[in-house]
Length: 199
Image: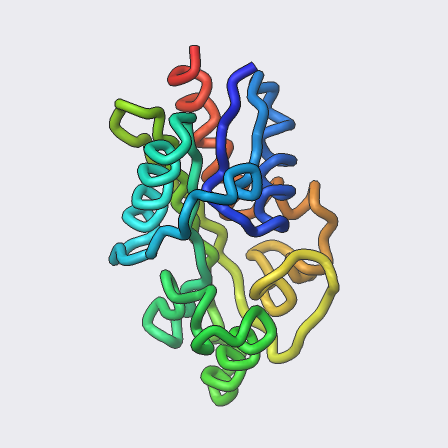
């Protein structure tokens, strides 16, 4: 079984990506960066989700000598010209999930319901040491509510209702959310690349 390192110390992400990839039948042992405490944080200096994911995956593959998977994702709000986008995790200046969500709600408070469209986007990257990285993309469109609903998920999940749904992604169980999420879509698209690369 090949060890693959997820370029994150976010326990939520490790669990979520483990569930998504675990359901695809890949013969890999998935670990997060907690298994490599000496690997430094990688600065996300790219201008796109794909560039940031590639920076992280390349750095972790180089530091560990193992295949590495990284993703970068975020909420792109139509009324905010696609922001917070790549700044989603630090939109409030480091205040965490609740502060980020509160800031977005405040920024679109005057936006009418019919113009509260948004998308979650994700770029997922696999880097095998000595090889060029492979990139897969995922997106889910939806709309933003005016107040939180649901306690599952994290980040902006409590205010995001995917198209065709009446529930927020925070009101769905993990299996339902992964079936339609941006991360689920990106990682399912990446799975055949992982399989090919690790053969």
